[in-house]
Length: 121
Image (cartoon, rainbow, N blue to C red):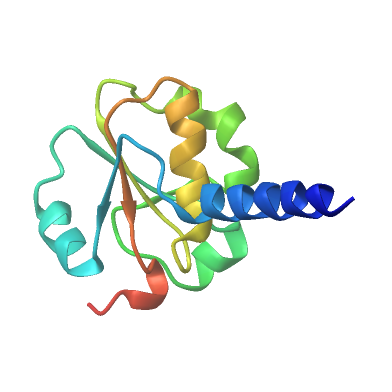
């Protein structure tokens, strides 16, 4: 009976680590690095995966709003050959969005760590 507890603990640790460890093949940048990236917009697509209300309230110029819950359906509006830079409020939703894009076949994906909360113009 005790071995079942070890198995359950092992599964929980695995699931926790899977959520916290970044997905392979996704680049991570700070908001300071993002400022440089925004100056070099050639072949880059900037998407904000927050809700339309959050986006309307405050967003970074140059970003297009594609809410996370609509990303799978609207990913066809993005070019798989160009880099996709993804941001949200804190970096959690954008990490999920990056994983979704990777599964959809995108190769050049960047997540902005800290999200809009860390942005200082």
